[in-house]
Image (cartoon, rainbow, N blue to C red; front, side):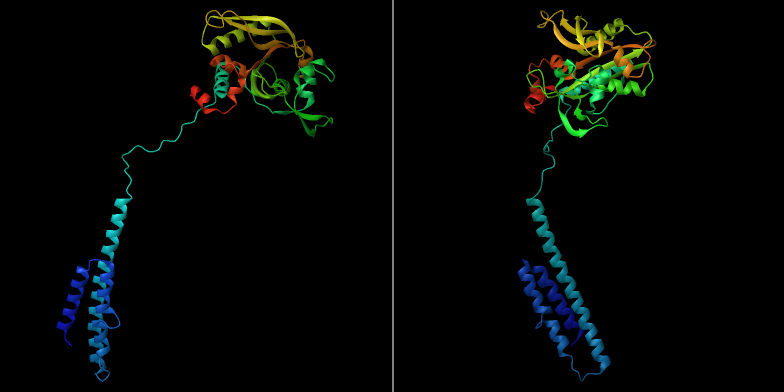
Length: 341
C-alpha cells in the first residue's frame, strides 16, 4: 500500500460526499469508506502482524490520517445538509416583522377615580391636605364622637355592615358609614389649624339608581381660631366652579340638620344655562362643627371653631359626566367605561 492509494481513497470519498443528493445517500457513501467493510477499514485490517513494529506504526498513522480527512469531509457535508434544512424551515416559518403587531389594550382610570383625582387637585390648590384613614371603624369614632350616641335617631339613617369583631369597649366593629370619623381621628393627632379633606370609601345598606352599598365620599374640615360660615360658602363655591369648569353656577345653602354640625345646611346647585337650569340639585351637606364634636376632638371650644362638609364623590362624577344611574359606574361594562378614556 502506498501514499498514492490513500490519496485516491480520500479524493474519492470527498467527491462522493460532495455529490450526495441527500442524507441517506451520504450515509451510504460513508459506509463505503468508513464502515466495517469500508476501504480504509480494510486497509487497517490488512496490516500484517508479521511486519516490523515500526513499519506497522508508520503505515497505521498514514491510514488514520487519511481516515481523519474523510471524516472532516463527511461532517462538512452533514453540516451543509443541516444548514440547508434550517434555512428552509426559517423561510417557511418566517414572520414579517414589518407588519403591525397585535396591540395590547391601554388601560385608563375609572371615571370615579378621575373625579377623585380632580377633587384632590382642586382642594390641594386651595391649601387643603389629603388624609386617608381606616374603612373598618369603631362605634365611638363612627357615631358617638360625631354627636350620635347610642339610641340616637340619626343612627337609623346610616344602617351599615357590622363585623364579628369587637373593640375595647365590647362593641362590634363596623364598616364606616362616612369618612367623618377621620375628622375626629385627625384632629386628635394634629393641633390646629387643620385644613384637610378626607376622600375614601364608605358603606351603607342602601341600593338604588343614586345609592350603592359601597360608595365614595369626600369630606372637608377647616378648624382655626376665626373661621365662619362665610368661609365655608366661599371655599365650597370656589370648588364647584373649578370642578365643573364654569362660573355660571348658582349655589344655595338650605337649612338642614346633621348631628355633627350646628348650624347645618344642605348645599344645592343650579346652572344658569343648560338642561339643569330649571331645577336645583342637592350636592352636599355642610355646617359649622358642633361643639360636642369639637370637644371629642380634644379642642378648646373658646379658642377654636370650624366648618365641615361632605359630598358624595360618585354623585359628583354623575353630574360631571352626565350619568343618570350610579350603578353603571360599577357594572364593569367596557363599552360604557371607554367613553371616559
